[in-house]
Each structure stands twice: as C-alpha cells, then as structure tokens.
Length: 451
Ligand code: NDP
Ligand code: 2IT
Image (cartoon, rainbow, N blue to C red):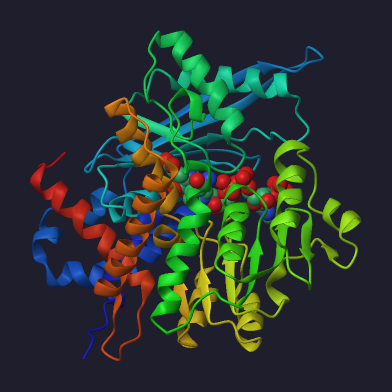
C-alpha cells in the first residue's frame, strides 16, 4: 500500500510559495520534484534531519545585474542580466544562458533548479545553474548582438570560471552568441579557458555539442519505445520548435526511419503531410539559422505543406510527440487531443514544455512520458564532455562523442526505470528522473556538511 504524503507535500510547498512569491514557473518545477521526493525522504530520515530538500530549493547564489548597450542608431538600451548559481554539490555550476524577452527570475530559477537533477542524471561532475537576460535578439543586427553579448559578459565574467561556473547556450543563445561572449571573457581575463561550452569547433568546442540535445532526446525516446518493443521506423512524429533542439531531434528521427510531420516557431506551425525529409530540414536550418526568418517561409517553397498561424502542432495525429520549443507549450487539452489521436510516446526536448495537467493526462492514459530533465540531458552531458576535452587539451572524434552521448542517454533511461517502475510495471519517468537525480545530489550534500 502506498502511503499518501499530501500533508507533508502541502506544508512544504506552502513554505516555498511564501518564500518565493510571484514565481509560478519556479513553484511548478519545485512542486513536481517535491511530489516525487518527499515520500522518499519520509522513508529515509537522514535527508530530513539535514534539511536537504529545504536547502536544495534555495539557490546558493543569485546574481542580477544591469546590462547597458548601444543600438546601431546610437540609442541606449538597458536590459537585466542574471545568473542563478543553484547547487554546486556535484561540480561547478553548469547550465545555459537564455536571451528572450520573457526571461525573469522565476523562469531562470525553474531552469536552474531542473538543471541540478538533470546534471546529476548525466553522472558527470556538474552542479546546476542557469542565467540569461530579457534581451530580444529578434530584429537586432549582428553588431548589436555583439555589443549586447560583450556588455553582458563584462559583468558575468566576475562570477564565472572553468572551475566555478560554466555557462552554455539555451533559447536565443547559440554559436554566434557564445563566440562573442567567449571573446569578451578572454579579453577581460586574459585567459583562454573552457569557461563556456558550445564553443566553435576550431577554438575548443566539442564535435556533436550542437546536435547533442536533439539527438539525445531521440536516443532517449528510442529506449522508451524499446520497452514496448517498438521503434521509430515508420512512426509519425510531431515536433514543436525549429531551433537547435528541434532541428537535431528531427534529423535523428529521419535517420531512424520516422516521418517528421511538423515543426513550429512562436508564430505558428508547419504541417507537411509528405514528411519533412533531410533536404527540407536543410531548408529549415537555412531559414532559422542563417536568414533568421520565420518558419512560414517553408510553405512558400514546399507548397503541399500548410502553415497554421498562431497555433501549436498538437492536433496533428502522430505516434510520437517531441515538444522542443519552450515551457508550458503543451496543455491538458493538447494532451487529450494527442491521446485521442493515438500518441504512444512523448519525450520533452524542451524544459518543462508540458503542464502538470498534461502530464497527469499522459500518466492516466499509461503512455510513455519522459520529462525534460531526463530526455534533454544529452545537451549538458555533451557540454560536460566538452569540459573534459578542454581539460585534457584534446578533441575527440564525432563518433567518440556520439557514442558517449548515446551511452549516457541509455544509462539515464535505465536510472529512470530503476527509480520509476511502479508495482504494476508502469514506468513513471517523472518520479524516476526526480529520484534518480536527487539521491546523488542529496548524498553529496550530506557528505559536505551544513553549507
Ligand atoms: P532556440 O532559440 O534555438 O529555439 C527555440 C525555438 O522555440 C524556436 O523555434 C522559437 O521560435 C521557439 N520558441 C521560443 N520561445 C517560444 C515561445 N514562447 N512560444 C513558442 N515558441 C517559442 O532554443 P533551443 O532549441 O536551444 O531551446 C529549446 C528548448 O530546449 C528550451 O526549452 C531550452 O531550455 C531547451 N533545451 C535546450 C538545450 C540546448 O542545448 N540548447 C539543452 C536542453 C534543453 P522563435 O524562433 O519564433 O523564437
Ligand atoms: O537546459 C539545458 O540543459 C541547456 N540549455 C544546456 C546547458 C549546458 O550547460 O550545456
């Protein structure tokens, strides 16, 4: 008989809410972890006595700073920069930087908090952190983006370092932005070090890092399908987003013999009933990465495809759904549509893209559902591999990195199965990921005393 721990969970969450008012995304992320972890803590009093959960929800350090920079026309702009250094029990703070107008403290605290458990699941020595700014790269010239990145790094450089805190990309931060920030760090500190990951391949970057999050998500989903004796072959796959994660998820699905029916951006989604093949995906990469234009351009070239403005792709019938855009992009009604249309597997390429109600619907329907902290951990894992290569002053081949990435995703899947398998055999990947991630961090915190 499973005991009900609602009273303990509610009391804990009441306290977290009162200490973190007006932070809905952070509360959402903590609630999910608390629901998985509190029953375990109640049965393992050493964690309770050391107040591990109370400490883990409090960031070790939160930095907020002004970022002033100049537009091409001479106008002055002011943005707010952040770095949330959440937990260093397992290693230097590690996590991406997001540049998007929606960035605020709640969003970065949710991402930094998730990162602790995700990084633990990778088995690499990585603490958890996240940062960014409410800067909108859309419509900015290249030189404006450079000046912003330089202004941002001028302050951030005081707080980070290869053994302290190692940022990387996230929404709005890709190879171009990492390059500008690395250049400014090097200029200020007079050091060529692995202070950022996602670097260019000629100057310390790892092969496969650009591909890693999307590939890793599909490697993870493949493991989930194997538990049902299924594969990607001839499966219809619906993907949201058309950025870094979505592009390489699509590439790997195509590679595994699946059919990618949709991709999207913040203006809407494209539906190609004939499937987005490699050549069409190259065009999407050109639209998004080089032209920095809208996904709707796709239907001008491929006229049998349809663009649906202002909509998300969840009404398209599919076997596998990979939400790869942003948080809370898949709601309960979307989950119901997917379920009614026969979806069997949902793997989060983005961080927290499914609302709690959507996850509940997938769980009630006994479908394969994996949370981002497990399914998208391949990105940060490969960042960890980039750090290793930087320390060794060596570069591994694509095949070597891809094999390590694949093994890490298979291992994370096994960890989720170990901690998440219910008495009836159903695998609760949410519980599995939360517990699997928590135990390692909690034990390290116990070892390191009350800090
Ligand atoms: P990109 O900036 O490369 O792409 C983001 C994509 O999502 C774009 O298509 C963008 O559309 C869309 N998008 C962003 N915000 C919204 C929104 N509010 N509503 C609808 N669509 C939106 O980012 P990534 O691909 O790197 O990141 C995608 C997700 O994956 C994020 O949740 C991120 O945290 C997560 N992630 C990323 C990792 C990485 O290594 N990059 C690692 C692990 C997770 P538009 O072009 O219109 O803005
Ligand atoms: O959400 C994430 O895991 C990332 N954006 C990648 C972080 C990293 O340090 O590579």
